[in-house]
Length: 101
Image (cartoon, rainbow, N blue to C red; front, side, top):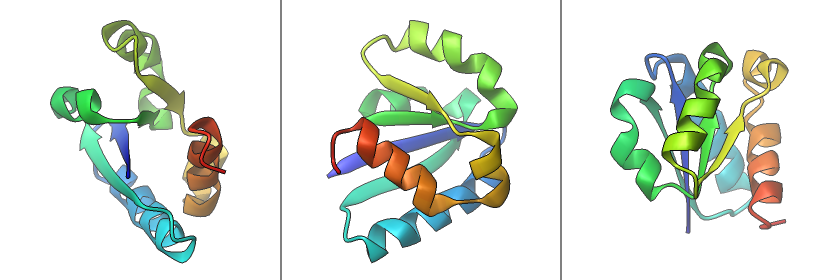
């Protein structure tokens, strides 16, 4: 089972993306845990993640996250996909990156 962590500024708007991604995962029968956290509280959760998705509002944090967690996959969520809350597309990007498609 994959562990997908989304990080953003406050964890609020990204929780909407989590819900869309969870629905897509259920529809596609893809076993995973998907959760969103505020960047300030995400350290332990990042350590447990298979992939970290970073909300567009804090994309400037990507270099710091990659430096702090060099063995983790860290990817931005495209602003277009985030704006549309396209959970299907974001989940499929994750599955491709993780080699699960």
